Length: 329
Length: 248
Image 1 (tube, each protein chain N blue to C red):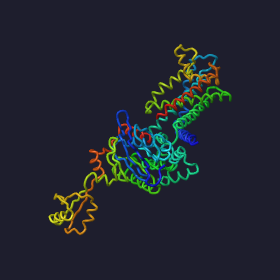
Image 2: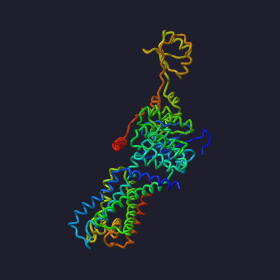
Image 3: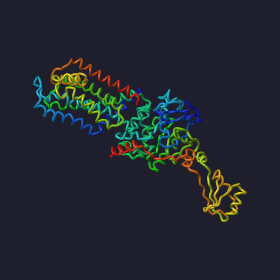
Image 4: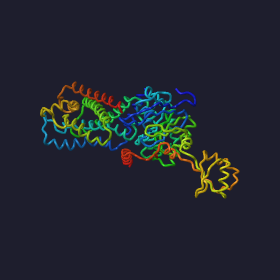
């Protein structure tokens, strides 16, 4: 078992998973610390879901080792399963049952102590704001309501680690934001470790640390800021009352080499914030200043050599979604 | 202990779903009724049976068998729905064994199918059959065993099928042959040799034989053999379901 706040929640070493000729996961190694929000950022087919499946014991690795909450996923799958909660990429609530019935079934198959069930279910429903809809069938719920229900369900047995596979795919930005507020709040209160996969840049911003994965390999690892910095420089653009004098001052004071463009003076800096702080007392009047930081998207392109190609659903996914919509009506 | 409760959770879910699905409940009523009324009445004029048994009385065992065959198979293959619409994943990642999952699914399917089979019994007076308590008990025994076997067979089929579209194929190549070659629709004592052999190899034959024994005429086989075959069929199907589902 892991001990202390800095213990590893997930340790992965040389993980490989082959499907025939294809190595969907091709030698991954990483560590997720307890209480951390750690994200896998990568395009569809990068091996993100395969990794989650291995970590959740739904799939055997071809090679390598993975420990989750201190238990080996191959030799102690039952112990791993009891320590984790999982939010699947696709919907997995039963839409012919009510919200409360879905939660009740989860309590039963996860052996939540009988005496605590009612209280936990009520508390969970209140937390996701579905107390009023507790006894409505899930088929009447919106996508966002279903997702919230799934999050609440994944937490009913008080897991130490929560796995989220593409948690907000298909949700509108507002619902996405609301979901993330709840997750951050939960992490604060419960010291929960969260491991997620995503191909959304704005979602990746929620992570303490990110791993960029592509073709089953880990390309880079770091906080969102660190990764952005690796994508390249931050650029400052200045419009001043006297460009010639400003250029002179920038050279002598900061050792910068501004270029004159139609937008004004442009130059790269290491950290935009630090530069702005030092700019107080600059002798030339500054009329306009803009700071351009590389985005995570830029970082992704710089590190992998291609863009993330979001929202490329396979035809099977599309078909399934269509069938699901038809059933709903 | 937890495994048993988990199994009950899966069973309870399927029962709730069945009761909420009006079309399924209605179908359970309508199918045997249509069969008895149209098929029974339609053929009774042209089919001559030994011992003065009317065709409607004769086909009654077949109507029960049909309810159980279709019902059980359908309940078993609902695992495909569960897979397609995600619920199965929730169950597969839970800290419970695959055996529990298969048994829970098989149990719920069996209960639903037994209910469907027993609903057919309500129509007995309609075709002039009056059931003694002993006959009822015998019929119930057959219905339970046949339901268990068919539901488990449905689970076996579901482990081999990726989509629900294949269900039509299954009903044409599994259910209908089992049904037609069971003696449910026509007497099997005047068949060509090759067909008689197939009838004998079909476990459903022995269930129909027992039911007919309880309803209208003496059994063609020994009652003990009938029961033994039914128990063997159910046990074999459950075992196969357990083994094949492990790879899910």
